[in-house]
Each structure stands twice: as structure tokens, then as C-alpha cells.
Length: 222
Image (cartoon, rainbow, N blue to C red; front, top):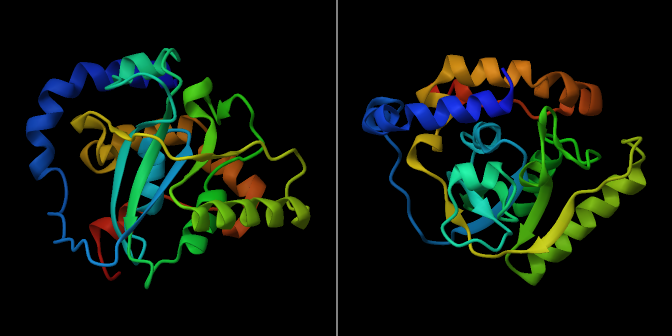
């Protein structure tokens, strides 16, 4: 299933997906704002990025949205048409005492193809490019160091094109996009498989490739 068709399907289903959201998955755990930090990553399809980070110990929430562009209050359709300058991205609230920013960076790299210039996997266009949006000088330095280390490692054959940019306003995506992989698991898996995301990640990273966390989210402690 191509991403344009998925986009059309998602927009068409928005009206009935939203009322069903409350029953679509486990109730969210109570979240404390004490000692919380935030990371913002763009890695192509935000449905896949959500499933990559939710369920990771220390991660409190993962929200899909749009950032990096010039259009206020963008819609999914506008972003998909690549006329807003925005990236599809996720905003991750995490406890740095449990999940360090460096560990999240490592998981980010292992869940994307940082050598792809024109998008990610089957999703092409500026909104699907990879980027790290730093919120502090410490995050900027950590992101630069991680990218430099990856370049020097020689692990990847191509040029790493992932941008490291200052964070801008993060616009939360429509409700039907949030936890889409839990609300519509069969359609999510069909999209992910047709996009060949996991096949490409395995070719790039081998056993270190980041996988979707549906099982961990639905079965905590397993």
C-alpha cells in the first residue's frame, strides 16, 4: 500500500477513528512532569516512529506532529503536499534518569536510513526526511557527537544526510494519527511491510535495527 493511499484512507477514517480512540488501546499511565525532558525526532512516517519509542523504559509519552516548517496549525494534507516546510516528527517525553538522551539518539539512528536524501523508505518528499531537533545546547552537542561517531564508524556506505536543527514550534497532529499502530494494527502492519521499512533497517543495521514495539506496549512487562 503506497503512502498516498494510506494518507487518503487515514483522512477518510478520521471521523470514526476519533470516537474509538479511548477503546483502542491500554489506558495511558499517569505521567509526572518532574524531571522530564523532551526529544524531537523526524524519521519518516510518524506512525512508525511512535511504535519505535513507545514502550521503551523511561519514555513517558510519544506524540506525533509536525515541525520545522513555516505554516502555523498545518493539516496532514498540507504537510503531505510538501508546501509547509514541516517534517513529520515525534515529540518524546522521557525521564533522563531512566532513558538518557544518548540512548534515545542511538535508537533513533537504528530506526531510520540516515543516508536517504529524498524521504524515508517508500515515503518520498521533504516531510519524510530525517532530522534531530535539539532543545538545548546539551542536546545539540550530543546529537552532533552521535552523528560524527556514526560517520567515523564506517557502518554506513552512503553519506549521512540527517539534519541537526534547533527545535521550532511542534504542532500536534490530528487525533486519528496518535497511536495509529494500536488503533489500526492490521493496516499499520500492511503499510509498514509494503514500505519495506524493516527489510531496509535490517540491511543497514543488522540485529541492532530498531523494531516496532506493539507487543511491549500491549503486554507491559513481557
